Length: 305
Image 1: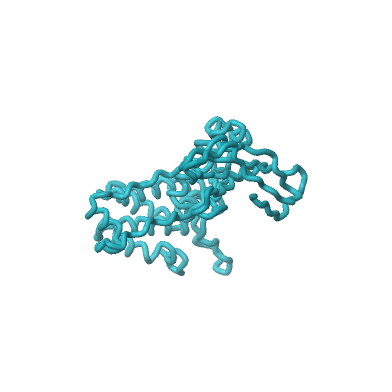
Image 2: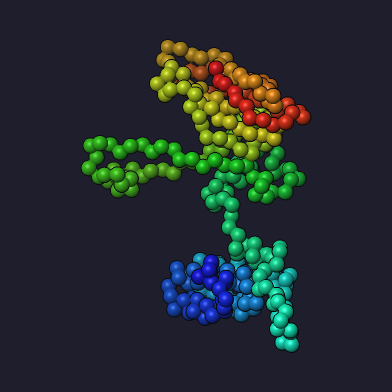
């Protein structure tokens, strides 16, 4: 109703029926009804005064979700009504004149807050803010923090471990954890750019605003397992190569990954070697690719040797 009702020919007819749900139903329905009333008020300025009166009655609701939704809606609608007051058409107006559309004006805070959703999930927003805060000197920067300035966090799912074949429980992980007594711990989210910021020479290149998921460069059964993570900066691309040593009788020293390409807009500017890799360890090596000034951007490929 909150999505479709305001676009009907007579949206005011729905208000009484929706508000009855606030009075008669359980907490989940009450919260949904408050959300629907808020959308009616955001899209129909002519109804804001009456809906605001109804929403104020939910400020003392016993349910937290209902009370919070009503509180946000009341605060936003008050600001919108002060900044963009609704002017009802005059009673002696010419009937032949085209009526003023009952729509929010540009810059209306109620329409922005109540109708426009976030461009990312809350989980992704949290991870993006954590990555921003970990950047060197991020909190001292005069740059205004907006959604466009936050680092872009890639969303990808790691493969889950398979269930044992001899397990009679089936594929229910929650039931398996309850029977075995082992609860699956929530994996801590690690900032993919943390390894870059840990090296002062790389941290001085600026803030990473996007990191890619790991890409395998070798087979898992190989003697040396190598993956690649791309970190994009304003004027550079940093290639991070986690290198794992799987040979018991060898110790890898001064390891690098050679990057070759024929790009007209990027060039390899430097490398940071993995000084020593013992058996079973994974150590990072880095290659810095710089953008050539004044060169137009064009598609290019780099090969890791």
